[in-house]
Amino acid sequence: MAQNNTENTKIVLGKNQYGKAEVRVVKITRDTARHEIEDLSVTSQLRGDFDAAHFDGDNGHVVPTDTQKNTVFGFARDGVGSPEQFLIRLANHFTSEFDWVTGGRWEAEQFAWERIATSSQAEGHDHSFVRKGQEVRNAVVVKDGDTVQVISGLNDLTVLKSTQSGFVGYPKDRFTTLEETTDRILATDVSARWRYSPEAVANGSVDFNKSYDDVKALLLEGFTEGYSYALQQTLFQMAQKVLNAHLEIEEVRFSTPNKHHFLVDLTPFGLDNPNEVFYAADRPYGLIEANFQRESISDDSNAWDGITGFC
Ligand SMILES: O=c1[nH]c(=O)c2[nH]c(=O)[nH]c2[nH]1
Image 1 (cartoon, rainbow, N blue to C red):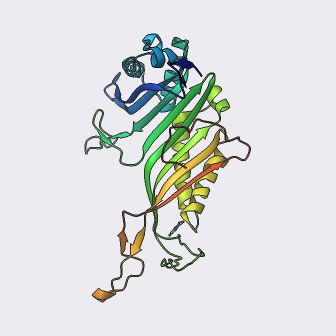
Image 2: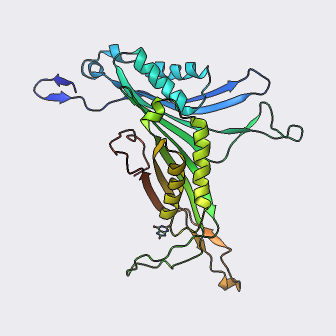
C-alpha cells in the first residue's frame, strides 16, 4: 500500500476501486428476421495502482469511467453470450490493456425476455417480446492477478408449497405465541448465488448458460421434494441438489424471506377453514440465510466482497 507524506501525518490508501455502475445495455441480434434480445445492467470497477490519482490529482492511470461504459457497449456489438463470459471478457480486456490495472470487479444483472405468442405465430413473434416475469439472473466476476472468480445467481424466484411443510419442535418461552403446525404454506422469494471453482473457470469448461438453467431447475426441484420441517432444511435440500450435480460449483448461498401465510379465522362468518383461506402478510417476514459449501474448500476467497444481502 502506498503512503503519502502530508504535513505531519502519514496517510495510507486502503482498498479502492472505481468504474461505471449499472450500464444498461440492450443487444439485438438481427442477422435474420427472427431477432434475439440480450438485456443487461453491467457494472465495471477497476483495481490496481491508482495512488497518484488519490494523492496527487494525477489522472495518468485513471481509465475514465466513461471509457469503461463505452467498452461495455463496444463489446456488446459482438453479442453477450452469457453474462459471465461477457464479464470475463471485460476483466481480461482491462487487465491486459492497462499495465497498472491488476484486477477488478464486474457485475451484471440480466433481464430475460420471451417472444410474444400470437394466434398467427404460436412459436412466438419474430421481433416482439414480453419481459419474463420470474427471476432476475445475476453474475459477478472478480479478477485478482491471474485468478478469476465467478459467482452466478438469481433474485426473486418466488416459490410456494401449499402443503408438505410444517414447523414444530421449537423452544417455547413466555413470548411464544406461534402454534405448532404440520401443514402450512411455505413461500419465499429465493435469492441464491453460487461460486464456481477458479480452476473450472480457468480451463473454460463451464457453459454458464447451461449451468444457470440447470442450477435453477435443481433449486426448484429441491424446493418441491419431500416434507419441509423448516425453510432452513429446505435450503439445505436445494443446495445439496446443486452441489451433488455440479462438481465445478464450490458453494451456494441463500437469502430467503419466509413469507408468512396466516390461516384466517372464518368462524365469525359461520364458516370453517380447513387450510384454504390465508392472509398473506408482507411484513414482518422471517429472514433465513444460509451458506453451504464443500468441506474441502477454504473460505478465504474475497470474491464475495461487495455482494450485499447475504450473510
Ligand atoms: O421455516 C421456518 N423457520 C424458522 O426459523 C421459523 N421461525 C418461525 O417463527 N417460523 C419459522 N419457519
